[in-house]
Amino acid sequence: MRNLSEALIDLAGRVKRVEDSAEAVQEKNRAALQSRREELEAAIEESKTELGAAATQAKDATRGWWSKTTSSIQADFAEWQAGMNEKNAERTAEDAEDDAVVAVSVAAYCLDAAEWAVVRAELTRGEADQLVGQGI
Image 1 (cartoon, rainbow, N blue to C red):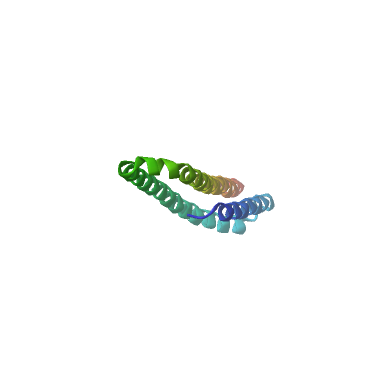
Image 2 (image 1 turned 90 degrees about the vertical axis):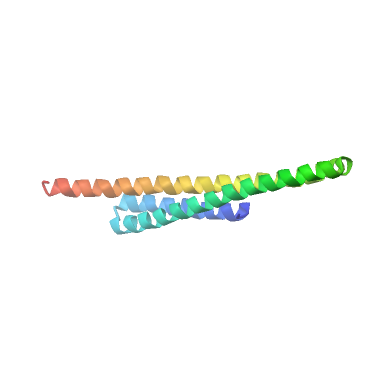
């Protein structure tokens, strides 16, 4: 899983691409829009894969943590309790970072999906206008 700063840098790049698409829509640059639509479709598929992997990793991490915690409690509760405060603080920080990365990935996916819808709408509007202009 990516770290938070990488996810935020990726999100900033995606926002820039949304701005570029919006500019292409305003300029009615159909070739740029069609190219961007293809890029968005690929990015959406990649995001689906990344989100699935993140969900699987989070589920596996949760299972591993629970098993480790249960074994530790059974082995030596007093020792476990003394070290748990420090471990919980670190785990909480890591979990919060992981949650942030997943949230940024979801936001990136949503941005891609929204941009794809805008590009698709513009392309469809252009095709409809073209058909109306031809008297079809």
